[in-house]
Amino acid sequence: MNVEPFALALSRPLATARGEISEREGFVVRVSVDGTTGVGEAAPLPDWTESLAECEAALEAVGAGDEPPTPDHDALAGAPAARHAVASAVLDARARAAGEPLARTLADEVGEGSTPAASVPVNATVGDGDPEATTDAVAAAVVDGFGTVKLKVGARSVAADIERVAAVRDRCPDVTLRADANGAWDPSTAERALTAFADHGVAYVEQPLAADPTPESGTRRDLQAHAELRGLGVGIALDESLAIGESPVTAALDADAADVLVLKPMALGGPDRAVAAARAAREAGVEPVLTTTIDGALARATAVHAAAAVPDVAACGLATGDRLERDLLDIDPVPVSDGRVRVPDGPGVTGTTRWHQGGTDRV
Image: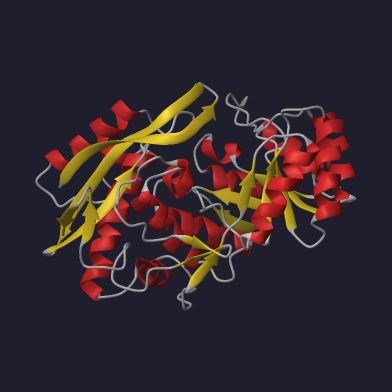
């Protein structure tokens, strides 16, 4: 197994609970499976995965053994970004050996075995701004072909966010509108916002309440509180709550806490786990949406394949390549056009038998 570090500068800082970060660091992992090389990406992110040092240590432990690397290696327990890289590389090698897209391999091995989608719808994301700036940004996204737009809310007062949402709906009556509060509200504030947003046709609000990092006696108070917000005319989506504890997807489904689960393959530990989680959500009557953690091109393409393996997936948060000043690959294998991403239809994750990094041709 070969492990190469990388650092990718962001086009604008990314806010996390531990402060802003200006670059994404991680590792490109190459694994040989029966003579075919596959590639995967580990891009750990604070508060979502293990640290960069923990990720590197886990990958070193996997590579130090005499046995072929496997996503089931003990060293990968508790290291989702490292597992993502190993699982992605192994699956990529299998797909390349079979001469099929990664989405086909994921659908057969983890999904429902249905024919993967040829393209995946994606949403645009619009940050905080006054009503005029917000509506201008949403209108521009609609012109660019996006049918779904996610607004960042929670940085302003609820009244101000209600005004922003109303202005967007008035100017863009047909766009599917989502909102993301990033856990900014308390239950009473969330209830007020959801009730008002329902009047403006908001499809769902993502993480209205903060995740609970220290559940007492195994009780997830955040899941209970989110469950109590359902039924107000706006769907409840969980995101940050899915990065806490063991089996967070199962816990969220058991608590009947959400209408939508936002699934990040990097945080869940691999595209296989993301597709399995999406299938479990569907079986429970909950809709899955797949997103990145602002990853490099390899992980972003891997997430696109995972989304394609989920039948009739809703618009996903995969249009994130513009958040990077430079990328892992010279040519983006999953560019966005008219609000959709075409799934590479050649072998493996990139759709070619070779991939290109920094002008170098790689197997």
